[in-house]
Length: 72
Image 1 (cartoon, rainbow, N blue to C red):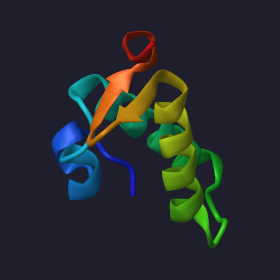
Image 2 (cartoon, helix red, strand yellow):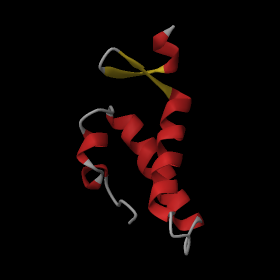
Image 3 (cartoon, rainbow, N blue to C red):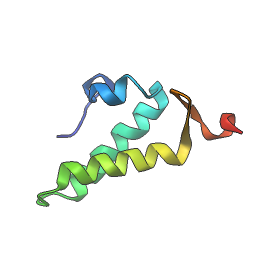
């Protein structure tokens, strides 16, 4: 199901990603979810797409997600 707000995201996303990364995740998830309507794996594809989108801008350092530019 699409997420209207970051507070609607799964706890695993909200508890680990900073707010901007949550925005990226939510927008990518919603777009992929709509694009794969009718596919039995719709939600799985949307979550994978959302994580991929986050990983284009953020990297995990220890137990924190930081913007790629700050990771250098």
